[in-house]
Length: 459
Image (cartoon, rainbow, N blue to C red; front, side, top):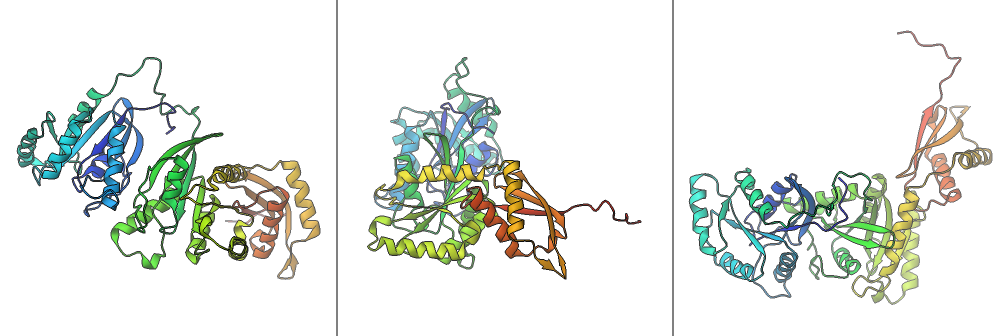
């Protein structure tokens, strides 16, 4: 579904923790975008998605639970993020819990919302059956107008809620102000995932690229739980940035919520076109960093290594050489990968990252001209013939590129399944060096040519 390039009406779901905001978000969006768990405070950053709500294209935003706390704490930073989302809203769906009844935090939040000058729709969630409807009537005391009893989990009352929201939206312009989501001619943004181990500085990097405190950051490891999608524009067009939860070794992942976070991160990686792997330069390249890089390569995504916290290093040249040596030894399948060093905290060196991403993306999309590919192939097999296997020399007759993203080549010959890995690496390295494709995954496929003189087998 192509993304509209125009500004869409913004609908924000807000409320205290564990009232079902993310479940309602997923219900309105029509699919599971946000992580949902019984544990309070699962959502920490606001999460947005462009959807079609009945007949209108809108931006739907899920927010962290409202809690009163010091601004320097995690909960305080979560509240500030939610307040920022409300400030940008055209309509706010204030979500409360019918089962727990009127809550002092709800009353405080309702009083604050009345002062914001926004259209407020009161959604009374978990209002199944007659008891839920009776509980919803009590919510008139908030002074926010008619309460709408709903069950986000089961879908009850969602239709009436949507109609109430749509009635509050600004009128659509007749000059096609909002472009059709299905218009395939709209330029799609480059999909960029930011991944890495916990506390490597991924969210700080996203905020620095955006020039605002869009996602929650802090010294606490594992602040980001869900994958958060945001947009920015550089000189070449729009980029969809996805900030992800930190990826730890599988053996250390034991909580259900963390497993869901890791699953969301892996899904974001698979959906991306370019992946920025953020590494804490002070700690160097860890084995888990290499495991993530290998996963990126297996998924066929192009990658840029981002060395964060570069400003606090004393002997930068020694660190750079150590990282380079480790990569050359351990990531031979991504030989020549782009490496960018910077400080996400101060912003120094950040300007180098998106150009490196764009270069990696261009290489990932590269198609080699057939004539040049054939000339290289003839020279390659002349210089180093295919090896002998079981007393017979393997024959490779020709090569062709069948697709890009990543560059994928098919070689035709006889007994191609016997071609050893070292000869495959020779061919890959030759393609990479000759056609300037550093760092990107290169795929080789082998097919046996049909022998026209072979006797057909009888069934």
